[in-house]
Image 1 (cartoon, rainbow, N blue to C red):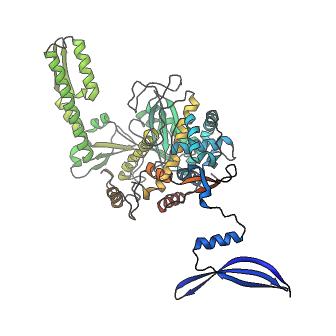
Image 2 (cartoon, rainbow, N blue to C red; image 1 turned 90 degrees about the vertical axis):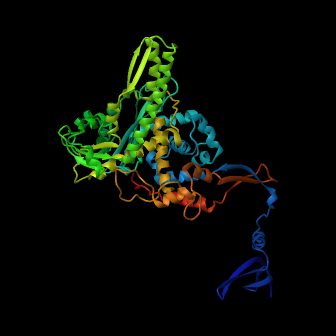
Amino acid sequence: MTRRHGAVHVVTTSRTYKGSVYHTHLLRRSYREGGRVRNETVGNLSHLPAHIIDLVRRALHNEAIIPLDQFEIVRSTPHGAVQAVLTTMDRLGIDRVLGSRPCPEADRVRAMVAARVLEPHTKLATTRWWQTCTLADELGVADATEDDLYRAMDWLVARQPRIEQQLAARHLAAGGLVLYDLTSTYMTGTHCPLAKRGYSRDDRRNSLQVNFGLIANADGCPVAVDVYDGNVADPSTFLPQVAKVRERFGLSDVVFVGDRGMIADKAIDELRTQPGVGWITALKTSQIRALLGEPLQLGLFDERNLVAFTHPDYPGERLVACRNPALAVRRAEKRQALLEATTVELTKVQAMVARGRLRRREDIGVRVGRVINKYQVAKHFSLTIRDGHFTFTRRTARIEAEAALDGIYIIRTNLPKRRLSDAAAVRAYKRLARVERAFRTLKSIDLQVRPIHHWLPDRVRSHIFLCVLAYYVEWHMREAWRPMLFADEHAPVPRDPVAPAHRSVSADHKAARHATADGQPVHSFRTLLGTLTTIVRNHCRTRTAPDGPTFAVTTTATDAQRHALDLLKTIPQPVASM
C-alpha cells in the first residue's frame, strides 16, 4: 500500500467542562494512504504561549516571519481627529450637499471645511498643514495648490444658493422659528469693495470691515449666510432675508426672531402686508420708557416677573413685559462702576484746570471728551467748561429714571396667544443667544473667520460661507459629544422663562468633578479633538528592504477615543434624496 506525503497543520479544538472552556492545539499531519485521507498527530502544542502557536501556524502556511526589530516606522501622521470630522461629514452627507457628482473642486471644498474645523489657517498655510495629517490622503488633495483652493472657492460660491436650499429643507419647517442676526468682522488690505468703515462689533473702530448675517433654526443650527458692505445698517438686511426664506426656501408660514435693532418699525410695517409671516423682537429702551405709567406700571412686577398687555401704539401686536431681578442687579452695579470711574477721571481733569495745567476752553473740552467717551456715560453728567474753569455734576434724575428700567425688557410679537404663549414668546426671543454663540465660535473660539485676507467680493463671500459650513459640521459634533463635554446633555425642564438659565444637576457634577459619571475626563471641544490626535497612522517597512513597499498600521483607540468616535455615528443621517 502506497502512503503519499501530506501537509502539516495546527488543529485547535475546544471543550467545556464544569463551566470552563479548554482549548487544545495539536500539530497534525494529513496524508493519503491508498485512496483515503488519514490524519496523524505529530505533537501537542497546548502548553505553548498563544503567540508561539500563532507563529507555528503562520510558518506552516509559508508566511515570512520577520523579527520585530527588523521593522521601522518611516512616517507617523495624526489620524483620529481627521477621522472624527470626516465621519461627521459622511453622516451629514456633505458630499451630496456640495454636488450630485464627484469632482476635484468638491473634494477640495470638503478638505477646506474639515481643515477649518481642525486647524484654521490661510489657504496657503492650509495646503502645507494638511500634509502633516491624513486629511490630504483621505480626500485626495495632497497635490492641491493655493490656486486650486481659490478655484474651488469660486466653484463653491456659485453653488451657495443650491447648498443653502438643501440645508433649509433639512432644518427649517413650516410654522417654525427662524433666527437671524448680523455681525461684522474686520478685513486686511484696502482694495475689497465690500470693506467699509461701520459699526464694529470687534471693537476695531478704525478698521475696514464686512458684515454678514446668519440664518439658523430654533436650535441654532446654521442654514444660510449673506455678506454685506461693512457700513450697512442692521434693519436693511432683514427684509431680504425674509424674501430669501419665503421665495427661495419655499416657506410662506414662518416666524422670524430678531433683536430690537434688527426688526425695526419700518420692517414690521412691511411684514404686515405678508400673510403667514410672524415675528418676535423687543422694544428699544426709548420705547419702553414711553410706556412707563399706563399701561406699564412698575408695581405690576411686585408679585410676578412677566406681564402681557396691548397698546394702541402697537396695533395688532402683543407686548410681554419681563423683569429679571438678577439682570437688574448686574446693570445697576455696572452703571455705578462706570459713574465712579468717570467721576475719578473728571476730578483729575478738574484738578489740572485748578493748577493751571489746562487753561483754554478747547483743551479742557478735548481732555474731558476722552473721559466721557471712554466710559460712555456722558448723558449722566452735566458739564460746565470755560477758559480756566471746569465743573461737573451728576444728573441724578436721569440716573434714577434709567435705574427704574434696570432688568426690564419687553417682547413684541404679532403671533396670537393661542399659537404662542407669553412664556414661549420670551423663550423664543432668548434663542437668539444661540446665534450669538455661533458668531463667537466663527470669529474667535474655533473657526477664526477673521481676519479676512481676500480682496475679491466673491472670495470674501466664499470664505465666510466655508466657515459657516465648518460651523455646521462642528455644531453637529458638539451635539453628539455632549456627554463628554462641559455641556448640559439633558433637555431643560420647564422653568420661569424670565429667570436666568440654570444647568442640570448632572452638568453641575461634571463641572465640579471635571469627570463624567463613569469617571472619564470631561473635555472642551478642542481638548477632545486633541485627544483623538494621538490616534496616528504609522507607515512601516522592513529594514532589509528600504526601497520596498510600506504598510500602514493605525493606533488602537482607547476606550474613551472609541466612545467619542461611536457617538459621532449616532448623528442622524438626512434623507437620501436631499
